[in-house]
Length: 211
Image (cartoon, rainbow, N blue to C red):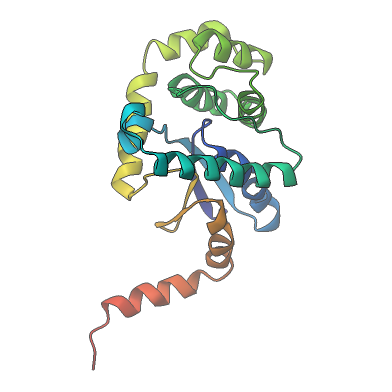
């Protein structure tokens, strides 16, 4: 029997995606699912506005969000330093796709997250991401060909498909067509994995005409 698939959209510059990793990877062992990891590269200015447009209220929310994420990080023994600037995570995102194809996804994934949040890696620096690729056993020249070839089109297609599903942030998990956004929805995701009939019944009742 094929394993149930949980698709996970992630972005290396998201603190909440970082701290959700441990519980998500554990699902492979605890619930026998297959995880399908895909990039959803956040366009910060698109949903947060320009720096000049941001209000004091906005910055209070941002400071709280990082404090909250740091609590989860500390509980896992993870280092989480606030980002030094706004990043375009395209190179790290397509590095994820490249690493999957060449059999070193987990090493790459853990390395990029750990180094970025400890200020040891600039995820928008092609040379820096290439160094991670080679440290994981990948080919720098093959990655260069991919980045300068089909990577952009593949990346953008994945983003378009995600948004067609309703994805707007990370981490977002998709199971049986249902979306779960944020690490605090993992328990709800587990409930669906354990009792998939609960969502099927709920969805069916929505479309059932009253007697």
